[in-house]
Image 1 (cartoon, each protein chain N blue to C red):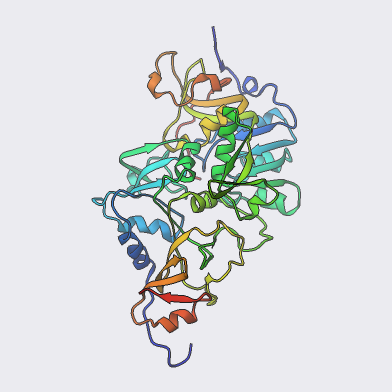
Image 2: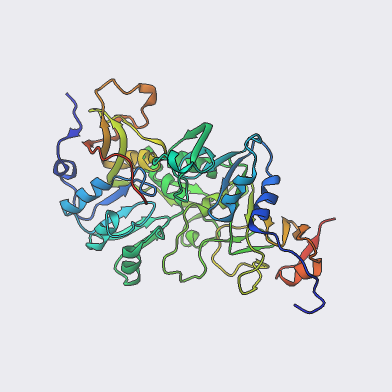
Length: 227
Length: 220
């Protein structure tokens, strides 16, 4: 019997290695797997590269992981979210590497990784500092730059519902990066608000099929708080 | 300005938003940037069906909710609570940016630091050595939407022109701005450069040119 549901945070985080690339879903605090980040803090992996839309706020979650010196590099589109005090301090001190990437390019780099596409051309960033050092190509009269897929060793995902095969649904704006993080990561770890019996999620309503998911942890924390 | 300068009344921000909103026809898919652009939605009547997109996977965004009817799982790109109109839909980030990058949006309206008369836009960083550059979806929107309009003050707080011959701040995208709505004028970006369509009441063309670095042309 396939059962991707794990019973503890330690089981969910088992085997994450130092030096891993971690893809982190979430936009604002909606659809962001905060408890899994706490689990990663507890688990202890270091020298991490983290890809996320934002660079954490306050002193909790991703910001706490960075504050503990566990993140070598962050790949994100918008490090200036609300109260990015930890990131700003580390960045100014030269203690964290930043790769700034347009938001759509991050999402597409993850999608491409999940779809087996190693590189792709995009018009986003042409003529800007994002294009420096990248291959340019003119296709049908328009200039594009070459971007690399962004694969995760680990992906952290927040779902609304999950079953033991790892089929997932998301709630409203909580979907955001979650489906592409799940498909782009070798080890996709999911926290879910609700566990459903196999067959109880309408197949037409499954957003992420279980093939993209490795572990599921039940974390029924309720609605997201302020952000 | 010299004593000869005429007296004029600059457009307020709600007036700027209303002028831009009146130019958006029914049926367009529109993404509004954070700040003044967001105000445009308040001036599009609900019976003129314009479908607003938010880059975090929202299509068919409605007005802000009443305080006691907030849905905590529904936010926009500015991380404010929103509502979804009947017919609204949710997608994931890569699909949402496919709408943008695939040229499916009819219009994007952004704020900007500078716009050049060849349509270049600079709106994401104010210096080459910005301590924490943050681009978000601006480059995707500027390069990907079918048309890009900018809504912004005509000059900086200290009076420096923002409509320039060449952007001095880091570019967001090249040659993509089609129209600029400022507190002083509505200006198209055409092959010949900036073409003035409308000016604030009492403002002369010479006054407007004096506040603009790039050469202005009068619409014929």
